[in-house]
Length: 441
Image (cartoon, rainbow, N blue to C red; front, side, top):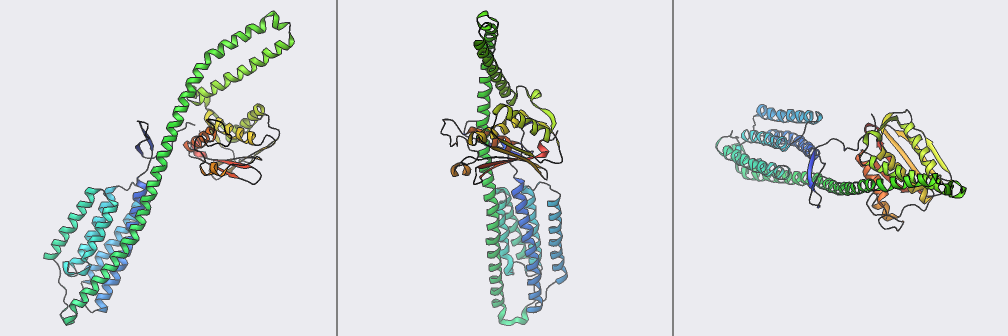
C-alpha cells in the first residue's frame, strides 16, 4: 500500500516556496452542479411557457400557433432528459457543455418569439437572463459569443416573425404590452436572484475547496522537507552507530569486563539500546522509501492490528491495555511501515496522557476500518481540537512539539481516510477511519 492520493484531475498551485505542487482538484464537480441548475431553470421555463401560452390563448383570446409552440416546449423537455442522462453517464461537464446548453435555450426562446410576434414580444428581454447566466458560468470568450448570438437573434426577429392578430383588442394593446413587460420583468428578476444565489454558493464552495487544497499542499511540502531531513539524519547516524557497536563488542570480550558481572550487564544493556537505535534508524529509512520492498507485507486487518498492538505493548509496557478487535469479516491488506508508525504515534500520545490505562477498539463500518484509541487523561484543549492536524499545536510545552498528530492526519488523509478527536469526559478519544479499498492488496 503506497501513500498515493486518490485519482482525480490535478492542478498546479504555488505554495509560496518557489515551487508549485500538483494537488487534487476536480473542476468538473462545480460544472456538474451548474448544469443541474440549468436543467432546473429549463423545467421552470417549460412550466412558464405552458402557463403563458394558455393564458394568452384562452385568457386574452389571442390566437397562437399552438402546434409549433408545443413542439418547441417538447424539444426543451427532450433536451432536459438528454442532459439528465448525460449527468448519469458521469461524463465531464466542460465549459463547452454549458455553452451549448445556453445556446440551445436561446434557440428555443428565439423560436417561441418568432412564433409570437418577434421583437415586439415583451418577453424578448429574457435574452438578458441567458447572458447573465453565461457571464457567471462561462469563460469570457463563450460569454461574448453568447452576447453576439443574442444580438443576432434580436435583429433577425425584427425582420422575420409571425405576426399576431390583436386588432379586436382595440385601444388596450399598449396596456396589454405593458402587462407583458411587467410579467417578464418579475420573472427575469426572480430567476436571476434565485439562480445567481445558488450559482454563487457553488462558486464559494469551489473557492473554499481550493483554499483547503492549497493548505494541504503546503502541509505536504512541509512533510516532504521533514522526511528528507529525517532520512539524511538516519543515513548520517548509521556510521557512528556501527562504530559504537564494534567498540561495545570489543569491550564485551575484554578481560576487565568479563571479570566484572555488573560492568558486563551494563555493556549488554548498552548493546540492547544500541540495537533499538539501529531499528529506529532502519524504520525511518523504510518509511521514507529507502527500503519500501521490505516495508510492505501481505497480511490481514486482524493479523496486522493484533501484531501491531502486541509489539507496542512489549515496547511501551502500559499499566493496563484494554484492546478489543471487533473487525469482522477479516480483509486481506498490504501493511505499510508508515501506517504502522502513525498508529504507534497515536498510542504513544495516549500512553503519555494516561499512563495507567489505554483503550483500543477496532471495528468495521461498511467498507471502512475504524480504529479508536482512548485514554483517561485531561483531554484535548479547545484550541487543539479546533486546529486538529496543524503543525506545532501541542499542550506539552516542548519546542517543536505537536508534529505527531500533524503527521498522523496527513498520512491518513493521503490514504483517503479521516482523523477525528474528541473529549469524552473521562479523557480523550482519537478515531482513525480508513477506506479498505486503499488498504487491500
